[in-house]
Length: 312
Image 1 (tube, one colour):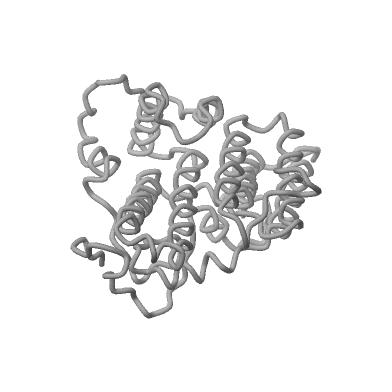
Image 2 (cartoon, rainbow, N blue to C red):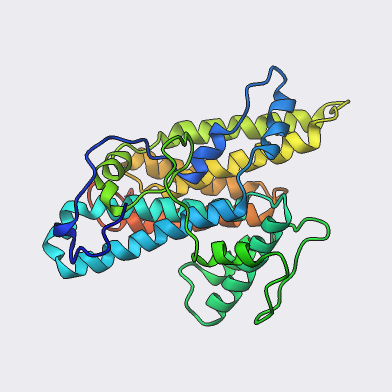
């Protein structure tokens, strides 16, 4: 798919066919099954969540494509402005994958390994001062609850027996390939620039995402207040929280294109500051996402960062 011999952006051959672009956080909403019972529906989501290694592989591929874009653009900077939305799209896809990997709970030994590898990698990265986000935020985001009996790794330790392929996938020695039959999150390359740019120029309705999140929180509260919560209550709450925070992270990642978007982002910050009973790791992920969206918005028009004379 990729042309690793092209010396610059100008020399790439871009695909002309249209394709849907779906990020990992949006794909989580698509996994919610159709069930008549709302509690059972959200509880069933937990069984349909992607593996952490799949999330890691797609995020790593998109991060590599972003770095590849920068290297090719450096050779031919005149084309950078025309193709900058390709880079913006890849940045959102990569960050959505990284966030989803910390948002989705582990459900298998390979997931435990991947989660432990992330914690180890981030400790090394941020300990060396190479982190892209606020170190305190990342530390909070990594405080996700481990499964009982979950795996722990020590810095410099050996890969556990049976996890050799998982280690290769985590490190990017084996990357995912495009599946033309996929209906959810996929993998995209710079050559998919036209589809990526079309996707980036048609952002989700941030206000609708926030309204939907508030409805989920209201449903969680109603389930909690029920006299007889029912057998699916705990799992439904977990599933609904994952969807709610995935939506909030999506709002954070997309750069504001007008004052209405900035107001929505302010509403998100206010909302997570009030929900102190929710996992702090989830709230930290939203703050990280907001920071990513703010950095993209600082490119200038058509994005905005100032509301009423105050930079947000």
